[in-house]
Amino acid sequence: MTGDLPPVRPADGPGAAGAGPVPPGSGAGPGTGGLDPGDPGTPADRPAVLEPAPPRTDARALPQHTIDRTRMGGLWVAVTAAAIVTLLLLIFTLQNTAQVEVALFGANPNLPLGVALLLAAVLGALIVALIGTARIVQLRHVARRHRDEDRGARR
Image (cartoon, rainbow, N blue to C red; front, side):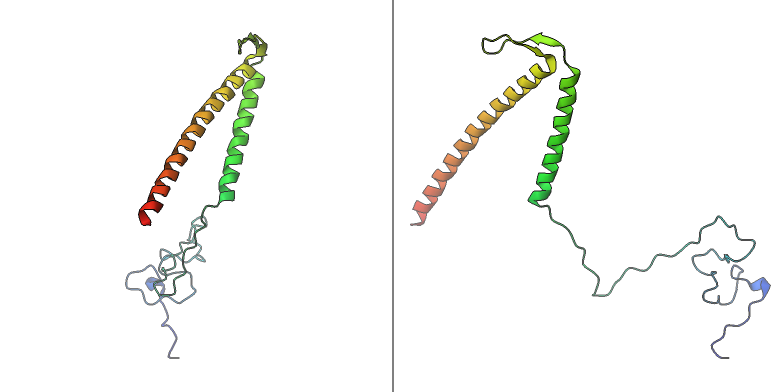
């Protein structure tokens, strides 16, 4: 027959120098190291080596899809971070239960140490928020003034 491969002699096996063509589907050939997985001399624990598929070079290559960040995704991250911080603060408060006397605006209550430190942190955060709010109001006032000046210059 005209499409058949010539017979291979044992000395001309797939790994031998000058060997003839390797029949398709025989397991031997490029990427297998010249070993036939069915041979008794092949180590059973050696995995078959597969060659990677060539990359697509035609104009119909599939586009890479990306997912943009969303507000809900950001909110989910923020809520998760807040829950973790709250859990850590709760553990801190429960571990520091020794009673201490705190002077707070003329009052001297006896509070657990963790609660007193948490109260101090909350008051500090409120002061920072108050200062930040004042700065935002100031920046909005300046921005409004600049917008008004720009409108007047266009007329």
